[in-house]
Amino acid sequence: MGFVIGRILESMPGLLIVTSAGPEEPTRASIAFHIAVNGAKPNGTEVAIALAGDAAELVKPDVIANVLGLGLPPLRELLDKCLDQDVRFYV
Image 1 (cartoon, rainbow, N blue to C red):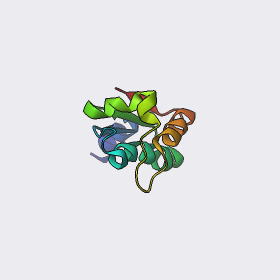
Image 2: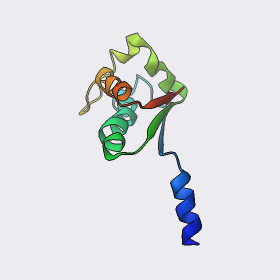
Image 3: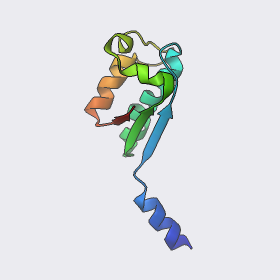
């Protein structure tokens, strides 16, 4: 049984973070990006972010510049780190 579970875990691609928080909730909207680039990627985990619902607005340049979550880097900075670290996005 352990062998089968080990084989399944080996074939998993990594972490997919799904968020639906949009720009009207800047802290919640930024958390997925923060976890991806300051948590998962630095620890060697392959990671992607899926933007669902209101979160799809976060790819608009005028929106990106104005999302400033509390206690987190600005979304623009987090997105730049995502791009530098080859984090994939699904919208």
